[in-house]
Length: 165
Image (tube, rainbow, N blue to C red; front, side, top):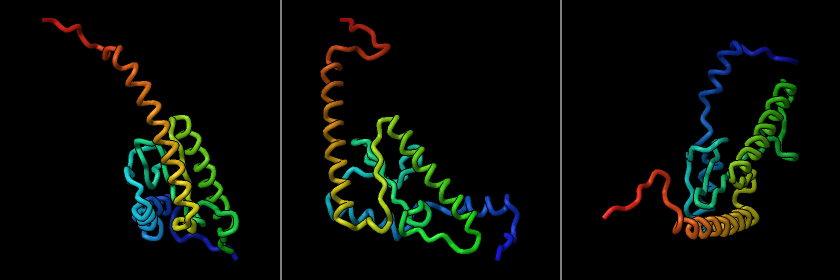
């Protein structure tokens, strides 16, 4: 049986645009507790970065996305509703395609992305993945800082004038 939507496409789009993607207790709050439990510091929420990651570690250039199993199409946990299957399959595939695009763009910008399934938030595997990424990010940031510091001692700032006595 196929059900027709009781509102127009424009109205449905407006309604869906009002659904907020942050503050989800089942994901973001649990992730914050994982950060605190494992002593991960330096993270930010609502960081202005492409793809709107749930959490960002700016110094290490790491973007963390907490993906819902339904909305992002987990291979074994996503259960597409029986009604309107074509719509939901298309919607979820578009989300997955957008996730891949965001990952690629962030990589091009020098960012590492971590995607965590909502059911894996509190697993030790997730904590180890974050810890490893932070260690690698800190090492990369240290190399970049050492290179820029060594170059910075000889180079003058753009537009700077020579000192006069």
